[in-house]
Structures are given as structure tokens and as C-alpha cells.
Length: 227
Picture 1 (cartoon, rainbow, N blue to C red):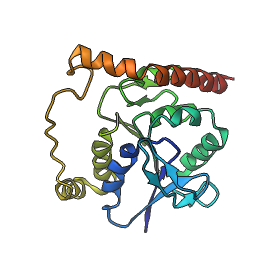
Picture 2: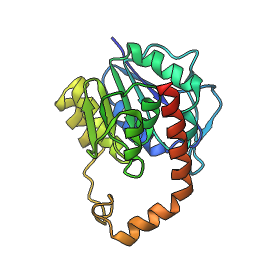
Picture 3: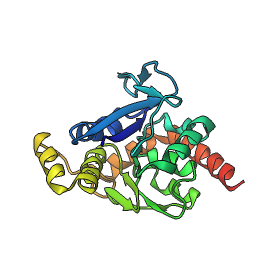
Picture 4: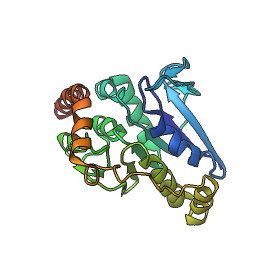
């Protein structure tokens, strides 16, 4: 029996949030992976890459696992009722509801993470609390059938964790070996806890306007849920 996975894609997606776990999931046995958006028109990711959806909201089959990646384009999704309704409908029958990076904020805006723990990109993690979700700094968080990955590159760790949960550790280890996933970054600057303070501040300064817009969208979505 086919295990069906669907990734929500959208304009200004952070493509690595999706393509990291996508690389893992396409190597799972008996698995079909689809990219989902409102239309079949190519979606422009952050940085300019064009990604072509496989199915639309209307033609998407039932899914065993649905995944919402992040990226600056998710700001508008938190108040996009068509997207939130689609996620609620698919999540109701999915075995696993998942996210990478700021995709957890979209799941939260859909009311799917109430009372749960979830991971998120470090810059936006605390925003989860606006939705009565507990922010968790872990690289990957499992809370029941909800699995979330932290920022961007955590998507690979997330993908391997899901592979082990669904198909067993041997399958996950084989995929990890096949993609030669043995990260040894040249700098210990991958988190605000290890990066130099001036590097962290520069990153925060560069993201100021985006984060202001994101927080405003979060508060609007949270108020809508409360209503």
C-alpha cells in the first residue's frame, strides 16, 4: 500500500525547508511524494528557484503525511483561509502532521498545534506561544503524531526522524548513508547560542522588517483563532 506524502509549497518558500526532507522521503519504500499548491503554475522560491506543483488543493489525494515548510511567504499563509482550511481537512485524516522551520506557525494558525510542543526557526520560535503552542528549541520535536523540525537545515534531521518513525531505523540509516549526511560545518555559528554576538545581531538587524510583518500576521491569525 502506497504511503502518500504531500508538501505544501507557496511563493517565497525557503526551498531547502522542503528539498532537504524531500530528498529523504523520495527514497522511502512504497512512498509517493507530491508538491501541493493552489494552482499548477510554477512557484517562485526565495532566491528565484522555480518549483512546479504536482497537484492542487482540489486535486490532492488523501495523505498519510502532510508537511508545511517555511520561508518568508508563510507570513501571508497564516491568514489565508483557503490554505488553512485545506490543511485542516488533510490533517484530519493524515497519520502525521508535520512542519519544517516557520511552517509550524502556519499549522498553529490553522489551530492544529493547540497545547502541543513544536520546533521553529530560532528567530520566530517564541511566536508560537501566541497560539498556545509551547516553543521547543530541539532540532526535531515529536508530540504525538505531530512532528516539527527547526530552521532550514533541520529539515534533513526531520526527514530522517520521520523515516525512522514510519519505516524503522534501518531504513533511515540506509538513506542517511546514501545521501552521505555527516555534517561538519566550517564554523560553529549555526545557532544564536554558538555564533558570535555581532553575527547574531547582524542577522537580527537584517530581518527586522520581515519579523515585524511576521509578528503582525501571527497576532492577526491568533486573534482570528480566539474569535
